[in-house]
Image 1 (cartoon, rainbow, N blue to C red):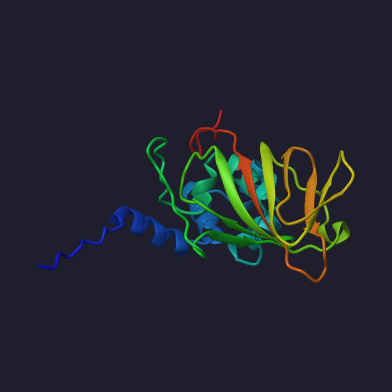
Image 2 (image 1 turned 135 degrees about the horizontal axis):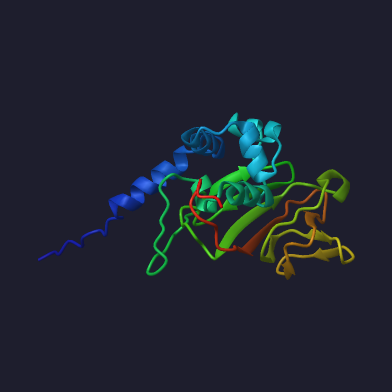
Length: 217
């Protein structure tokens, strides 16, 4: 007698969330959130510190945002970072898990980085994991240093990078090297070699978000 093993099914709710996460771009979500509150681009600019022209380009899918500007946007709107990726976030804080398969993360490309966010649908995460392809080849090309709340752990997955910061001399990091730093310090990561790809993984601590959007003091 041959027994058939039943294949475990992924909960329908998880499938639905994953589908919605793939459909919504950052521009779609920003426009959706803004219009739900009747806010103009100028109003959102006042709340977040991001220029109206930048916000307009995001909504029209002309540019994306690096982590530091995503954090500014979420904090200014008083929402969780996950709400910028999907309208259906998972908010439970115990017993939850999120599996991000290869090529299933939420990818945002800026001038200097291609960031792929794992567990993007989890709201109120204490940590934000990001796999990054480093694009900029020099600090001059990179431009202004990034800075954001929290602390960050950086690990070089492939190639080599040069870590620049406002308080320390530049340091070259090879595959397998790691660095832990205060992310409020201005910092930039550029390629260590012009001709070779460079990839890193970062884990960023995330401060607890404020009250829900619109509930401002």
